[in-house]
Length: 158
Image (cartoon, rainbow, N blue to C red):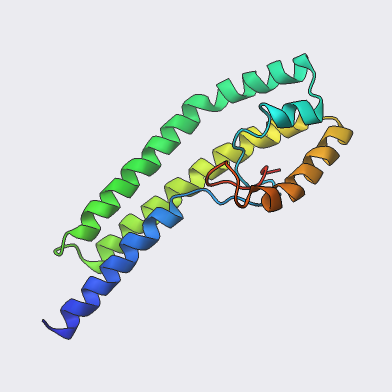
C-alpha cells in the first residue's frame, strides 16, 4: 500500500466523519441564530405564560415555515447522502469531495436561516417580560440539559 493511498484513505475517512457533524444544527446557545426546537411548546409555553392568542399566532408562523423547512431539510439530507456516497468511492477526487462537502454546508446554512427566521418571528410576539424570561430560561437550559432528554439541541435557541 502506497503512502498516497494511505493519505487518501485518511482524508476520505476524515471527510466522512466530519460531514455528519456539520449537518447537525448547533445547540446550547442563546444566540438568535440557535435552533428553535420545541421551546415554545409544553413547559416553556407554560413558564412564559403564553396567551392563547400568542400560541395561535405561533402555530400560524410554524405552519407558514413548514413547507420551506421540509424542503430545505430534504435538500440537506440529499446533499449529505451524495457526499457520503462519493466519499466511499475511491475514484472520487478530493476536489469533487470538497465541492460536495460545501454543498452540505450550504444546505445546512439555508436550513438554519429558515429556522432563525421562524424563531425571530415568534420571538416578536413575546412581551418584553416574556422575552426576558425566555432569555433567562435559555441561559439555564444548557446546564440542565447536559444529561437530560432533548437530544441534539441543549439550549432554547433564543
